[in-house]
Length: 462
Image (cartoon, rainbow, N blue to C red; front, side, top):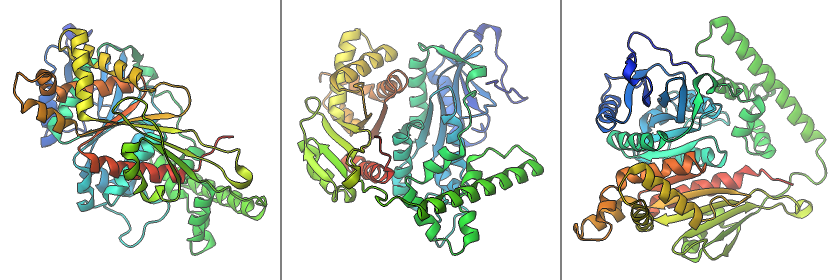
């Protein structure tokens, strides 16, 4: 993927051509305070490590390059205000579609407190009702469900930061890790094919029943025939095309929508007597998390069993959908969720520092990630793994508050730069989403969204 330089871009010095470059998209305007603060902070933190430049990127806001290769990941930064405000237009869907089609792993970096979503405005959204093709987000649960879908559908990694300075720390830590990775030729970064219409529709409707319900809510046949057209248009990159091309794309989207409606109508008329199978959800969790899990609405109708945790002091939740009646042979892949408290992470980090013999970020992160993978069955065959952390900042502050003589003081003091590097290794080397939450309540809010999205997926494997 060529990096298009224009008059505002910064040309590379000959001395820097072999060094790592963190490219920052020109749309992250240097005149806007937060992006400018991030840019300037990155220049300070990465001096002597990587060159930070403004470039015109065709996807994402941050990308690491060296000569003719791209490294690590392509990161799309969104503030809560931006994500909510532009969600009705489907900007987030279109941008993440580009990331998911890349040869590089994609990551959504969401900056800000998710609870503030309740006070943001989705510009252009229908103020009265929301249609089934409406991609707008209007409250915190919408955002959490969006993140859960990204995780469950393996679209991209999810990074959460509190503010602009926190974002700069994460990007700097990722740079330390990415310097040691193998690159991908820039021309190959975006060679993956675009998402098909079937994938676009399947990403919005989790089951045939859900699509039928959407059709039933339309007031006439014409609206049913065109129901999917807005959804398909949102997923298509038509911004750079002329009026004639956009009209042709719109006509194509309308035709596909009409064809899908006819197929669904035919399926409804000739549906097999067995019908769509009911899909109860089975949940197994460690005893410490059992009470919290049973309070989740989606868990009230599923079978909840206690199970021994995968490792000492680690809480675990397992989810699986099972067919019933005539479809008892159907089941979904299992979802394994491992939950670690911040104090446990500090112990892993301390042991890793002792093993490495110094506080070099990349080496400590690699050792810590490897220890986590070995302690938990994060790479066992079958199923999907998700790693959640709870209260890291609080645990680090508690250790630092006890003074410099406290074991682990130096590790706790540097947790803010060590932990993002651990997340980078888990994501880029082991392909595991590791997401931190401020406290137990915030983590439970996300688990509610995961349960909701997982229970509605109804994607069963024979």
